[in-house]
Structure formats: C-alpha cells, structure tokens
Length: 212
Image (cartoon, rainbow, N blue to C red):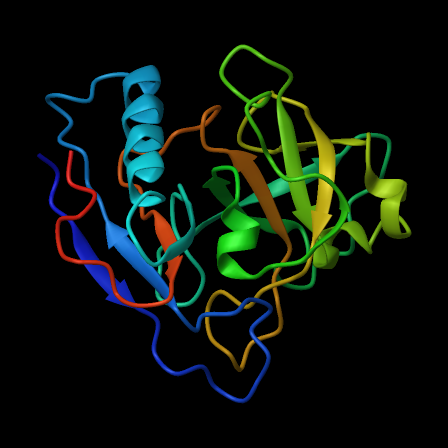
C-alpha cells in the first residue's frame, strides 16, 4: 500500500498565514504509478482514504489535497479572466497558484469561504469544470460575490472554469511574503498522483490508521 507519513505543522509565526495550522496533520501519500494508472482510480482511492481518516477517533475534519500551504510543493500558471484584460505584469500578477483539493479542504485548513460554496459531490469528472478563487485574485476584477459565475482558465490549457466560491488568501512560500493569487480545482476533476491529504484532529491519529 502507499506509504503514510504524518507530519504536523510547526508552531505558527505571528504573521497571519490565512489558514489555521494548529492541530493539522498532513499525510504524504505517493501512489505507485504502475498501479494507479488513471485519474478515476486515483480520485476514488484518495476519496476512500479520506473517508476512512474521518472515522478515526479524534479527527474533526479531513480532505484530499494535491499540496498544502507552507512547505508543500505548488505550481503556478498564467491565468485569463473571460472578458477582462490581464493585470499589469510586474511580477507574479499574471500568475496563480493552482491546487487540486477535495470537499472540506477549506474547513480542514481553517480557510474562510467568503462567498459561494465549497466543492462537493457535484464536482466530479464529466461535470461542469469549476474553480474556487481567493481574494487576492478575485479583488482585482470584482467586488465580493460578483466573482461568482464568471469564468477563468489557465494559460496552459483550454478549459474555462466557472467560479463557484471565493475564499480567503493564504501565504504559500513563507510567512514573510504577501499572498499570491490562488485558483483551487476539484480533486475529483484534476486528481494528483502525489496527494497530501490533510486532517484536523484533537490529537495525533495512530500511525497507519488510514492505510488502505
């Protein structure tokens, strides 16, 4: 089975991170490519593991994720907002951090959902491509809930995704850096073969508690 490596977040710095790391444990879960050969299998396996984690005593929330803030790997890509001109390019303004996450990710990490909704069972392969963006991206084009229903796409692909939620901004690189724009995608639509599920618990769960 895939190896599990629980890791708790360190004591948070005084600078607000945009999420609440206290009590959060991450699980390194690399899926062997020889066995997990397609997106459907990856998504279903990770979903089953997360469901099992949620049954562990002391666990209050758990979610699938391709990576996590601070210390996790993350990818960036250019983005295009339908009907809008891109912002002036003086640095990372035209880039967005892209993360695939499952339902309850924002609740698990303590990231507030300000407008719209979280991902849920509607957001799976073959359904409407959707995204959740953060305030750092949304505030450049819209006020509050006005972002909902608009479409964005990454410059590295042709898929337009409808915005269904706006969440708080987080710091990824370090506590000293300003938040970068973020675009979140449903894990079931864009599964990651190297997931890092996260759980929030009252105490550290026993090793191997969620092993398949």
